[in-house]
Length: 228
Image: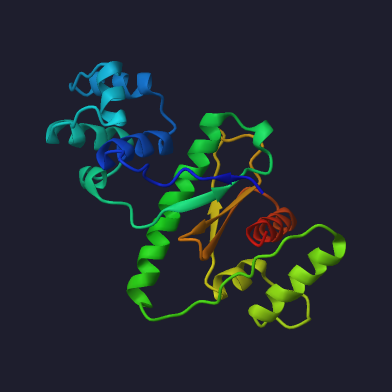
């Protein structure tokens, strides 16, 4: 399994610049579109200036952050909040069918939802200990069956068919994100994505527009990737 080892915030990367870029990607906007929106709002900024902010080469003024917040549809204090979690994403199953920008948007949108969910859960259940997902190497059908049996044992699922894969993952402490991918700027070819929070909490992302059967398959497939 290939890992995307890019953390939520790169070591040494200024947090404000990262959050500006994150908000822009989530809004499915190019730098040129952001600059045009700022000019229309009466807050002119060059593309070079925006790029410099995103790289951390300079820090924007409070008025600029407020203007960017309006363009992206986020509160201005979003840019100065330290991300609560970092997600280590595994490789996309259909990476060849998705352009780089679409992949980044999926990861950015999913990371924001995971961050909000994990932060809330930590606040509501600070002492809760969640079972870990057992990791193993699968090189044959027998290995795959053994891995499935191991997960059932760790999560106390028994031998009966699993009624809801989503509920099984969430009950065991995992995070499931159903990501809406609208037609405009949609990441064509996206079925599912998986990763880890702090190397212990599995995260599975699926397209909400998929059929129930397809979502169930994607959930099971992505969960399997987190055990390898």
